[in-house]
Picture 1 (tube, helix red, strand yellow):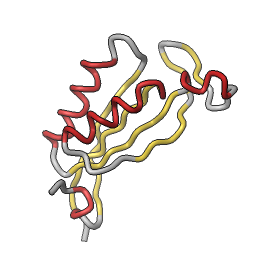
Picture 2 (cartoon, rainbow, N blue to C red):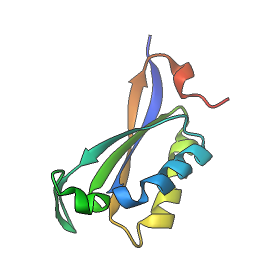
Picture 3 (cartoon, rainbow, N blue to C red):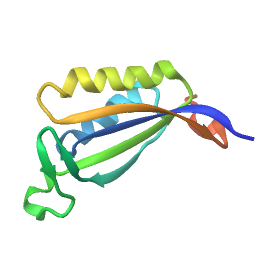
Length: 107
């Protein structure tokens, strides 16, 4: 059996990852997945293969699955307000179906 949940996706600069992770945890997220991200957008092309000297300026894609839409909005609103005025980034929500909903509940 599957259960409905919300996936929060945040694509932003690696430089602010620690702050974004804190926001996720404070808002009620129980975990996240982070992968290197590259692509093209309004601020130009970002590569995933840059030299390690500029590693802090690469992008990451952070995915968080939460059980509640309010938690998802709290994460996206806080990240956008705190960081997107000064750093590149986008965020979006997706409805997903999950197994084991207890993995995504905060106790």
